[in-house]
Image (cartoon, rainbow, N blue to C red; front, side):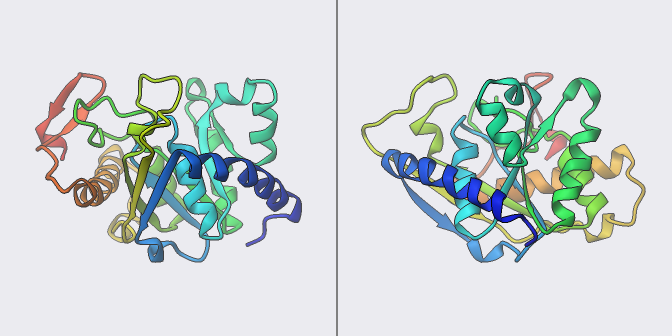
Length: 240
């Protein structure tokens, strides 16, 4: 890793505040941490709670990597918080400008051996049963452009600590955050192809299927056929 000592010190300070809070709110169960490479990879996870970034950041940091999130640009304009996440080299995504600058910034982090965390759905799932939705193509584009491994991560239980519509966490009973990390997504056959919409859609669906497969194991049940499309508000059977 080539992150500066100052950057690592900033993460250490943040971790010293965040980890005790998370540990107080919920137990944790992490499966498959051996699938994380030594450096230079993308974590793609499902999104069920506003606590997800802290929980996934905790996981990645505890494995010896500094997590760099692609986050909404609006967060970087919040006093104090914006300055903190900027100093920690989190990456703003300005959707109005297409997100190209954020992909370039993420590419630079990966080139230095860093770890990027992306929620391919780009928002909390609106699937009625909380299964992963149809993905945006940004994660696939970055993965195919850089050639780094994509590690699928499924999480479950965090949404019970802080449900989608809640403003404060549930303290009692104590929750349990279950996270399962899968093997790298098979994308090698697409890496030399032109980044057409068809190729990006294929890669995106492979990423979401890998996440869903791990989530099925965590939940002990099979996901429904098709994938929820937040634009149409329907489950589209041809998309999974």
